[in-house]
Image (cartoon, rainbow, N blue to C red; front, top):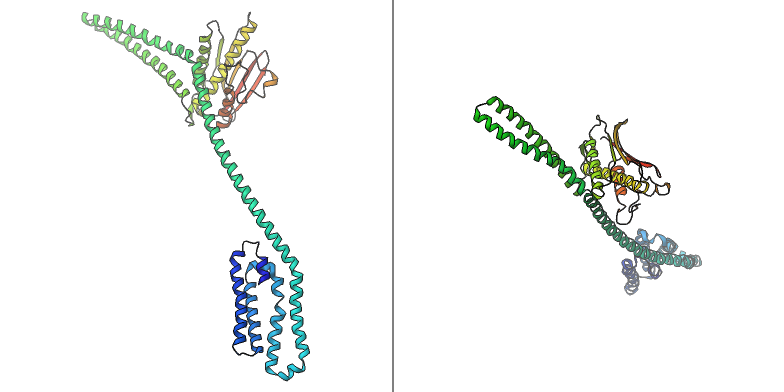
Length: 425
């Protein structure tokens, strides 16, 4: 029992089995004292002791944790067999026992010798097991410490990711508001046209009402009905241009809001045309001397595209703004007879896709930076004129969110062409 307790000292089972092994040891000692003081002869006491030892060995063998110590337990088997047989022979025939006394004593000697040899040879093995258990506990402690450290690092990384996502959302919103600010003048110009129509038709309608009242007073109902028809036509024009102004305002409000990420069937030609003119007038508001040729080639048979209109509109606005900026910079550097030109076209592609091409004859993109222009915060504009997020966000919107593509064809000094493809559904 002492040997087993020492072997278990550096394992997780020590506290569980220390008391049990102590009780077995003290129980064996108590049994010997009881048998010695009860008057039972030594032979019967020996048989009882042998069977008690057999019971203890059987109990320990059933426990999985004692499998590594099987050699130590099996060392007592010869004694468990020899002791009952020898003592039983003595009880049955003392004369026979005396005749072969040397043989029986030799059997006892062999049994105890076997125990000694096995214990001696297993000591090294048990010491190695104890060393392994100690090392295992050390490794488990190191693993637990490392696990706690990794868990802490993981939690810190999760917090960092949350902060980065929040920062990204803020940057996107700032980029949207910045682009909206640049287009304020273009928006004013676009709204002014329908408002002028509304004002003009309102004034003409007021005059026509006065004429109609005069004709009614004279009793000329035919002329009054003709004037009423003209008023009705004017009101229809007022309604049309009012809706036009309302659409521009709503579009800009959508542009400034956080995206809903809800895809809806959308007329891509309408959005492209809207932002094309807004981007142009936005730049002209900064430089009245700037003029450019605007060319639109929209496919009349273009199907509705399932998309987040705010996000795709933002991409097109960025493309148009960059195109007008490029031709404006070339005009300022080249001068002379250079005629800025920006073109937008749409068409249906095989495979249920649509294509939007934004082409300009501006400064073009140097080969050295073509691979960088889609990277966040990379910009070729002077400090304060660009955030470097426009094309990066455009890539995320078209490629990641809408499963489309963005390709760039450009030659430095001659112009650029951005080709966007989008799946219809």
